[in-house]
Length: 601
Image 1 (cartoon, rainbow, N blue to C red):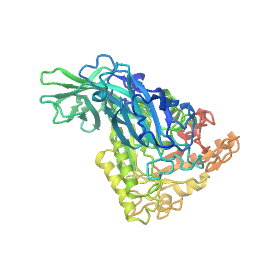
Image 2 (tube, rainbow, N blue to C red):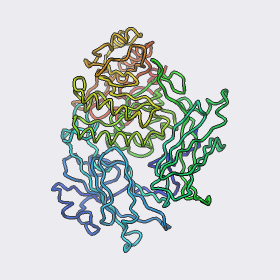
Image 3 (cartoon, one colour):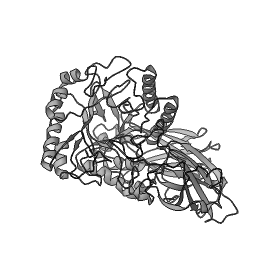
Image 4 (cartoon, helix red, strand yellow):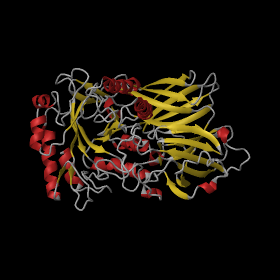
């Protein structure tokens, strides 16, 4: 286990931390709905416009949620936020960055009445240097930040995932998450500062590479030092010059050449070892300019024939579908601690993997997956329409997501599309097929170290894993379809169990040349007293019935000699979907030990 402590798990960006140089702006903000869309014309962003804000909201909770204190599901042309800003002591020649973890969907930011940033995309973070926008005539505690957000419920070109386009949630869709929904925070950084880190392990080569990007071009003579440790003992270090604003550093790990001992430092769900990292920028004279704490994991992911490999060993995926939605706070967790609890819950129920579904998860969630040992399939929220605008938006969002999360060892697969959402006619439209292939290949260009699923469930175009969704409600049917290689070949030849083609735009891989996973199945509902409209793919009447159904389904799947793994739908009840293993408030519907026996044996 890493020496990383709990406070790192509270940091909004756990893999790039400047201790004691960041401050959360979460809490009570002034708030206003702008139904007439008059705010820009009337300059609600001005420092003297406080009277325009007629209520309060608790950030980072979306205003649709109960947790925000607003709980308004209505349509509003724009949302406006305002709060005071106090400058940290001793800013000196440093810079002050304002970070917004996620604002759905389009946002503008002003500081002391000056426009600071505009951002499109509701899933990804952005930051702005506000130092030169601060009004020098104001006292340190007299500054103001204002955020305006727009999020059109009916816009199906934006990546929206399962946020409902109808006024009220229905079927598998849930209430919207608009405006600010992740942590807002300040960070004090030096004038010459690290902006991002991208770690890449080379297990056979006994080394760890990291690309260090700076916020701007470095002065002549600046170098970057990287030191890796475990349990306080140094594993390796390296120092290289910075060229422009980037440095590629390779850290040799000499002890990893010992073939009898190298596996003890490898990351896996069974042994989630993390390496602590210290990255320092130094000037030509050796003086430190910036220092950040980070961590990384030594592990490899690969596909060989019909086998998924983790650290060059077969890895059987025992996954559960994770929607990351809470009834009172929606896509925002009720607290940072809830993210750790969510990871631990999946582990307690016997899973070694989660498939994040139609959501880009919080970096702190991925941190706890890294620390506690839970592998992750990373997915994005999808659009509902195919158009040039939808393509542009999702492509920008997805590439930002991959670059943000590429260093997390827990992430073992990328999923840019699910069930043809946003490419609904991919079976017949060459343009939609090209889009799926292109985004899959762009993902590989950014990260050639992980498998990519081009379209989870069906209508694959270029996947490294052949994944199928099948909600058959008996083990007998699943045995018939997936019991052995011959059964899988018959089931997935042409049209799959959901009535959709399994591969489009070219010949499908030959049986035995690609791992096959049942990446959605189950979905058994058990929810006595659930509201009208609640549903699952099948229904249990009693706890005993639920146990029997789960045992039947999992017995068939786990007995398959051809599947490389599975993903059960789903961890918790979500909105009107009552097919979770746990209730919406995270209470298991059967004893945790019973569920663990069913899913893990």
